Image (cartoon, one colour):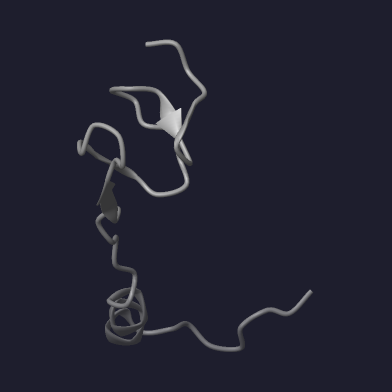
Length: 57
């Protein structure tokens, strides 16, 4: 297993970690009820997915 030869400085560590950004989930409008929902997920408010009723709400 590879082991670092020298300790990475705090500055370099923090510069590397500065790219770790959390992104907000992209919300889309439901086609049936027009409520915001996650893409490729059944709508939690009306239970439709791809214009079909898949959940009983």
